[in-house]
Length: 429
Image 1: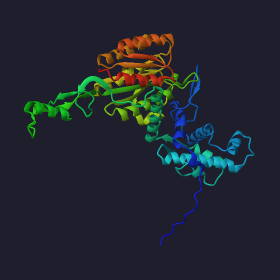
Image 2: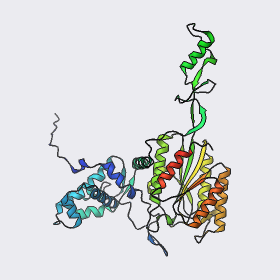
Image 3: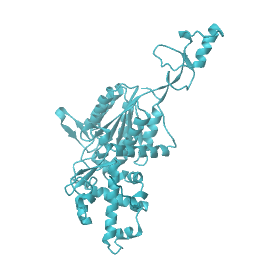
Image 4: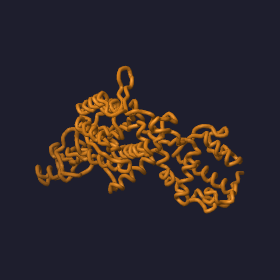
């Protein structure tokens, strides 16, 4: 016979925590622009890529900062963290256990995944450390890396989209409305006579009226093919978008991380398209020395590097991706902060020149922009800098590509892109 023993429930500090709220507070850290390839030294810009953004210990440190900001720690914990407490081992262990439980909860909810070995297991640092010293667990946590899961990226994309929509004063968004009409499922306008191929969304009152006008009130009514009327609704267009993200060195230089806000906008745009515009498509292309497509699932780990800016190859790849899309509209959205400084020449060789506006590089870039225009693909540029020579370059590029240009900052980038995306869908390519 099986027996069940019930123990008194003891409330945990974790019960009072909002894991989703903590995850949202960590979005800046989780989407950090990072630096591909590890530490890199530049004679003018110094060292880059030194920040730890992937270990479990780094995640715990950011969680601790979020807990302090949100007022979730006790007075004894805060004093211990400030070095003002008596150095009680029990308080330090309580803090370490709380962080372990939060990480475990994030893993169990599917927001993050842990990789690597810690004390012979793949669990958290606290599990690896067993009953050992807190310092041993911390050392073990340095050997364990974490990754955002697809669910975690989707959550951050939803929160980013919600914040952007609220800043625009919108409660929601819908499909792309155009001036064309079709037969659908919503009665937004009048009725049309049914034609072969239309959705059989009958306007019953209009159909019955036609039959009565033709034969009078003789019952049963004899419906004829010409009596059929269907609801007329706005035609919903579909759009294929390629989002180009600059991953050159300058995106994290001069004390400003410009790449993380760009990734946040990409997540919000991806969530918007997937949930509100299922007929649309979004492809993401990063461009540094070379351009390549990355799946949305890899966006969280995308990082800048010691790269130049090969805008021409980015346009070429984006155009190739869009030409394969059978959509009503096709467009390129480019987020960058500098001039083109590299092109791909024969056999994959990269020609680089970061000194001024190189005419050879500019000609190749303008040539690719012109090819996009001939293919009916506008290029909308969001420039995160406003130097005079960049203004001249963007104006020329916009004129050639017949797109639009926005000179913005990391604070307003998301609002500009969302306004442009939502407003521009009413135009047919």
